[in-house]
Image 1: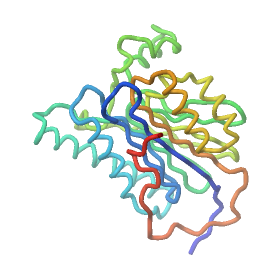
Image 2: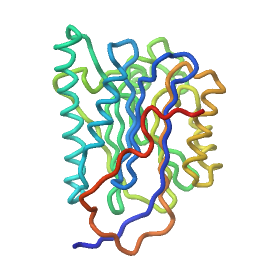
Image 3: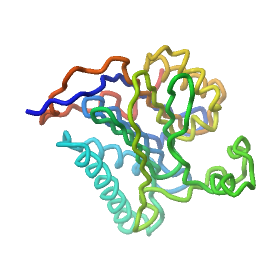
Image 4: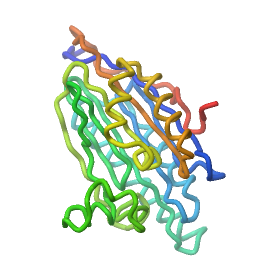
Length: 271
């Protein structure tokens, strides 16, 4: 059995319905034993957004332990594409072809590198050496306006079309998945979130809360949810935090054949 260097990590995640909506259309996946985390946000205003996000998370949950890095990437891509087709079929059979869709953002870690895969406007941030960076680019109308220089980035969340996304799982027959691969550094912290968080909490506040968490993922997640709720979050709020430990494991065996259930189920709300 091969042995390869790898990082250790810890993680936590929570989803909350928010202060206004009756249904939580967000869902999250926390599978540290596989090195896979995800956030999905069902498209508000469309049919069965909660079904779409849950279908994505349940699909990703079925991914087996990867044989290698390429196998891991391929498995996640394939599962996202399969869910896209299942949502299209569900729309045709049960919802008169009305859109059933969801955003999705996934973080994969294998040995000493990570990958971000995403569709829609859920985000992944990375805190490294005190500097926060957004690793994903929103598939949204306001992001296109920002790219064209028509509005300032800080005004995007207040724009009348701030909730209009340009890409989602289930919205088109051919779905494009964006991805980016990055090397891991000791002490990296990652935040995956639905737009219910980043439209309520600024990037500066995200950075400050991650820094003040002192690499405690559970405390960071609690702080994000608490701050969003204190501001009367009008949308569902979901956060997943992953911390890369400062120490590199000497060796790690290839993953075994068993996986466990998601330790943080998508419907686990903050009391």
